[in-house]
Amino acid sequence: MGYPTPPRGLRPANPEQGSPTAWPQLIESVRGHGGTLAHVLGALGTFRFRHGHWPSRLYLYPETLAALVQDLTPSGFYRLQQHLDVLTDLERDLFCADDGGNVSIYRVQAVPDTVGIDVAAAWLGLAGPAAHSPTQARGEVPGAPTTPKPPR
Image 1 (cartoon, rainbow, N blue to C red):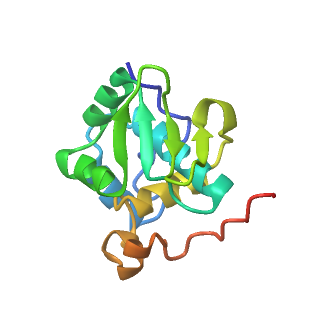
Image 2: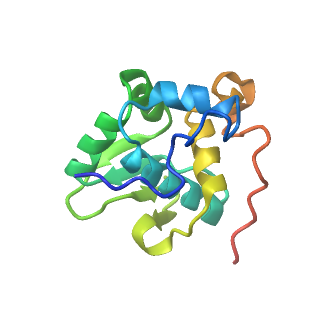
Image 3: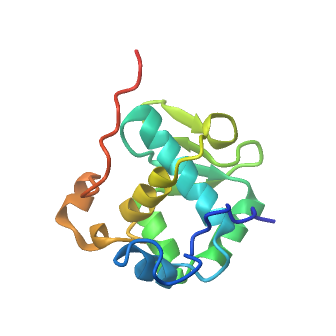
């Protein structure tokens, strides 16, 4: 159940690594090893990179959803649900979609992107100063890299 934590992980190996403002809040939202959460954040970052905006729905296998619930504190999972409809699906896992029909399949389309993971964590309010920023309501993340427009 769940996924192994990526080599970089969600928790810095020593407290001096990573952003001093982002890591403490992320650690407060994570209670497990964070492996499944890292993949969910990667899926969200991949969708944003491909389509230029955030998804509105996240489809997960029931087992993946159970592992995600174990990875997050109750307040962390609440923050996730404030931004996304989290749906279980027996055919799709780590599948992001929006109301316009845009989709991203993490297992097929994801590329290793630690910036996407960090930006997704900030968008969800799990890390960084964006958790309390007025721009978050508009889907913006201060200091986030500009998302390139998808090819047409």
